[in-house]
Length: 313
Image (cartoon, rainbow, N blue to C red; front, side):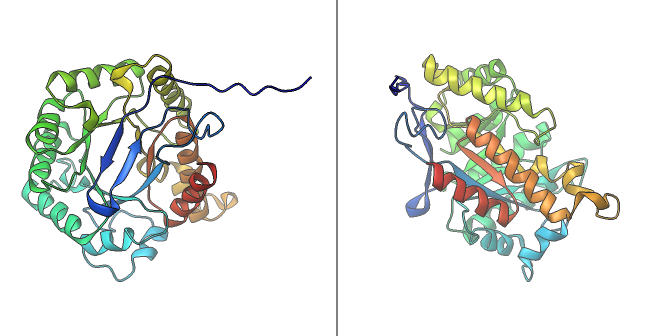
């Protein structure tokens, strides 16, 4: 009996969000099929990869990461080197030094770091906060002001601080907003609705629906991504028709499989290989379940995932 191919067509299309400016700007989203379903329709904008760096420099990085930045003295130099690696589409500056429970760097110092990084690279920039709600509300608002005209994405606006961050980024300074929710389609939808009610154009919103390392409650992450994309396309749900970005490196390099020393776990193999494997496996799963962009750290991971994207798009 002959096989008759049946195309799965949707009436809805994920919004296209452009990150950065000029020739190196990248477009996220824009698809009207499930990820890599090229047999149902062409890929509008292939998935993108960001490389994560920190305002803390290389202080907290694994030795295998430090080796790639040998000779870099400042965060700006690290950013410039990071932007040169194969497969990198944008740079992600994590301002973890602002955490009041950590280095507690002042806002002005962190804003200056963001400006220096922005000037050092020609790729689009994503700026991530320190995960402290009170500090991020002030910090990301100031970053949005300082980087006017750069079309940067600010991660993240959460239910606790979205009014400050979304208003500053999306209304006052014309930047992009990362809407972060906790691995639940209803929470993701609710936050998008709240941001829209502020008067922000949803075409400036990118969702971070949550992340985890493969094997660590990861089934909740990928099932949420599946549900978000299915509802967006299948139901034309306007409050979910945004691209999804997923921070992978911050989750994968901290789990024991990627961080346990070879002395403590002699049967697990080299630390670097384990870290790369964990990062690649998690990133690939996220991309196949609906993420339009992933944030990685190791140059080998980035090159590997980039080749997969090119082969399947």
